[in-house]
Image (cartoon, rainbow, N blue to C red; front, side, top):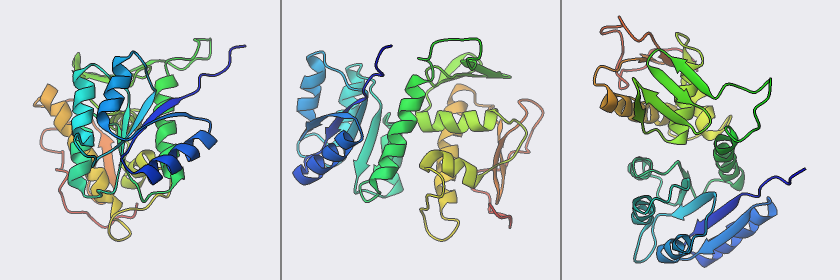
Amino acid sequence: MTEPAVTRIALVDDDDLFRESLSLNLADEGYVVETFDRGPPLLEFFAAGKTVDIVLLDWRMPGMDGIDLLRQMRARGIDAPVIFLTVLSDEIYEEAALAGGALDFVEKSRSLSILLKRIRLIQAGAKSGGEENGAAAQPALHRLGSLELRLENSRAFWKGERVDLTLTEFNIVSLMAAQPEQDVSYRQIYDLVHGKDFVAGFGPSGYRANVRAFIKRIRQKFRAADAQFDCIENYPGFGYRWGQEEGMGGAVADEESPDRARAD
């Protein structure tokens, strides 16, 4: 039997102590870690034909910051999944990271267990199409009307056109599409993104703003492919559902609608 492949991680951070500490923790978890104190050495690493499975990337670094490094990677055809690790907690930075092609955004103050969950989500997505096909194998394709979800590589299509979702956004769409016409709560979506019982935001329901931001980005991406897209319905105060493709008219509430009193 062949041994399972070891996941290789590139860690890019100019903080020597943080880089050393995190690389040791990841090594203890069984990962092979390549460390870099700046962006250019990572680009040289890739230019030499070397690869990694995941890149952990700091935002603020001298010379070339993290978002510029990500752009350089994508411009050179380097599509390794990227997780930003940063002290910048403002939502504008998360928006910029995800819009730039990162799969996730984790504050450095979060525990190692949170980061490991995010890494494992990416591993699960990468491996979903790599299993040997057998009689009991799960289908690699899910279709719902004009929506096509290719589970083997986490790619989404709408009316035949690629919708460039991040892995997290793909998982959210998959969750709703797996149970069309059924309400999915803010809490269910948030747990899918951040792990069960993770808490963030202001107040007991502060996490809803985070979910709304994800749904807003997903809607924008589908509407870029089809201006009439309106399949993601909002139940204010509870969550969202994947609705009927036709005949909904004005029934879709905007993501900024005020919440009605209903517990998550």
